[in-house]
Amino acid sequence: MVSSTPARGYYDPSKPLTLSVDAKSKGLGAVLFQDEKPLAYASRALTPAQQHYAQIEKETLAIVYGVEKFHKFIYGRPTEVESDHKPLPLHQAPLRLQKLMLTLQRYDLKVKYRPGVQLSVADALSRSYLPETTETLIPDLEVNEVHLTTHLPMSPEKYVELQKATAADPVMQALSSIIKHGWPKKQGRCTKCFAPTLGLQG
View 1 (cartoon, helix red, strand yellow):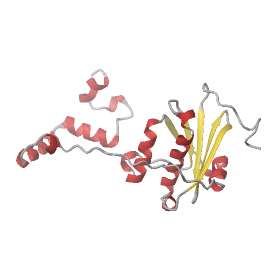
View 2 (cartoon, helix red, strand yellow; view 1 turned 180 degrees about the horizontal axis):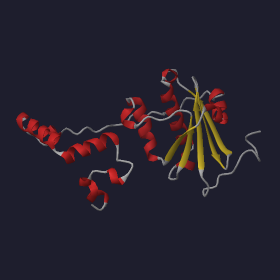
View 3 (spheres, rainbow, N blue to C red; view 1 turned 120 degrees about the vertical axis):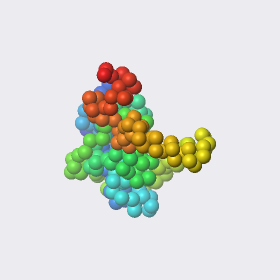
View 4 (cartoon, one colour; view 1 turned 90 degrees about the horizontal axis):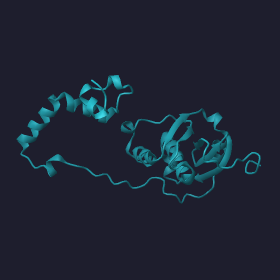
């Protein structure tokens, strides 16, 4: 039996964790590994609405399900996640996928792509899932929008002037690019105007 020793391991807080997840058309599966031995298993059915999600949304939903199911093991420590889908950057993802990805931000996760055939346990769980669907896996996130004209009232003419000045300012344009695309992978490629912020020389 996969749920008894020696197949099943015991949790050790000093050893690395691996979360293996998978999503099928009607179910999710997740298993927590340590030293290549499973510590805990989880599965659940998808709701009728979730069954119509795009596959990448289902796979991300499986990660959310896994981390929330094993929250007490994972929270506050690095965890490698095995999935057979490659995640999209946050700014390229549709709204529902963004909500799922934002839910994962509180965890220290490194998502690693593995072909589905290598996720045998998670695959089996996602096929033979439990009928429960009680968890709320997509929270209602509140997004605070800040409108410059609301907090700093100005005339339409002054606002247009501000837009033009911002578009002509190299520092503001560099900042806009970083917000949209993220920081450069190498410090040497970072715009010099941000060097003081990063504590860089020159």
